Image 1 (cartoon, rainbow, N blue to C red):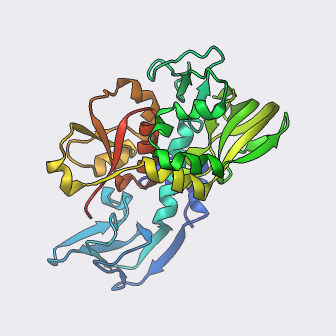
Image 2: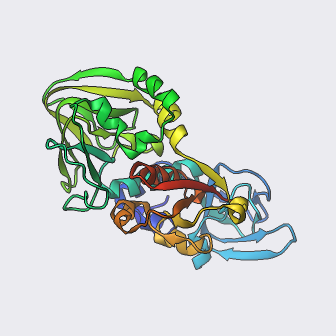
Length: 356
C-alpha cells in the first residue's frame, strides 16, 4: 500500500497538491516481483510508468551497459521508463516492489493540477464600453487568468468571437461550419453550467445574460458578459474542470461538443514542427518548456526556458511578438494547452515534436 506521503517523494507527484495525489493513488497498481524478473523489455511501447518502491533494478541498454537503481536513491524518484518505446530493459536484481500508473492518466492529472493553478479556463470578456484593450494590459488584479476586451459595435456575440486572435486563425471555409455546429442552450438564473472537478464535455459562449465563474479556493470571482467563452482547457487536455460557472441572470449559451471543438477549433489552430526541421526553420523562435521545474531539471531540450503551464498566462506580458514560440511535446497534453493559450492570446506558437 502506498501512502500520500510516499507518493509525494516521486516525480512528478511531489509537485502536486494533496487532492491530485489522492486521485493518483486511486489509479496506481502496486506489484512485487521476484529476483530475476524482467519488468519490461527494451524497445517496447509501454502504456504504464514504472516506479521503484523497494529493492534494486538493473537498467540495461542496447549496448548492454547497465545502470543499477536502488529504491533509496535519487534516481528511484523518477520513473524507471522515462520514454516509450523504452531505451532500456529493466531486470529485478532483488525482490522488488513497484507501482505503475497509466502514462496518459498521469499526464492528465499533472495537466489538471497546472491548469487549476491558473484557477479557471481562459475567459474572453467583451467590455460594455466597447473599448479595444491589448493583451498585456488586460490581466486581472489577482493575475490568475487573462481577460481580453474586444470592441463589439454590433453587440453580436458572433462578431465579438471572430475578432479574437484565436478565431482569426480558423480558415474562412470552416467558419460557417463552426457556427452551424453551435447548439442553443437556454439557461436560468442560478443554473450551474459547469462544475469544478467534473469532466469537460462542451465549449461554451455566453450569447446573452450574465454568469459568474468561481472556484472552491475562493481565489476567483469573475462576472461574465455576452461574448465571453469558457471551457476549452478541459477539452484540450482531457482534464477536469478547474472552476464552476453559474448563471446570475437568464440567458442563452452557445455550446460546442468536444468532438466538434477538436475538429473545428483545436485542429486548425495547433501547428506542429519536427525537431529535426529546426535547422531549416526560417523564423526566429524560442523554446518554452511548460513542465514543472522539477521535471524540467531532470529533462529538457537545450536552449529551452522553463515556464510552467501554471505560470504561462502571467508570463505572457513579458513575451515578445517577434518570435515563434515552440512548445516541446514531452509535456504531453500540457503542450497542447500551452500552445493553444499562446495562439489564443495572439502569439504565433507551435508544438515541437521531439524525437524519441
